[in-house]
Length: 193
Image 1 (tube, rainbow, N blue to C red):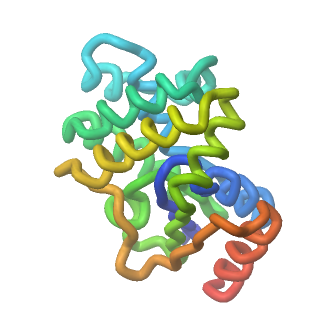
Image 2: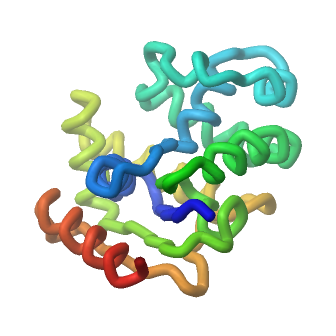
């Protein structure tokens, strides 16, 4: 059975950076599940049909990391039929040997509740807004408003809301360097193996 690491948390908390580092460190496959929703939104048209026809090549499109793509992803992620269409894709990915790291918002609670390690990565709103603004070359105050709106939408949606799994290890990266956050995550995985 493959070893699965589920990483959840709000936007710009550091979960993607940690997921990529864990994947490289342990030699596991990595899937940023947010790209599934971003790519579905980028395809346009009926979001359910777009999700049903999604393929791996769609995850490499330009513009998938933009703030607009993130907002579109958050809106369509609230559609239960879109979520259902993407679940199989994620399950197949998680089943790869020797293991997989999946990061998103409902990995530990819905997609891989049986994951051997569940991390819930958080950071303060201010820190997350500054990180995202630096990444996109945007205004931190504008990013703060967008992140808080997205957090509200993701946390309040009926289908798979953003929340930590009961058995998740919460990792607050607000005051940690990238190296410190990665080291803590690696140690958490090592203890579980």
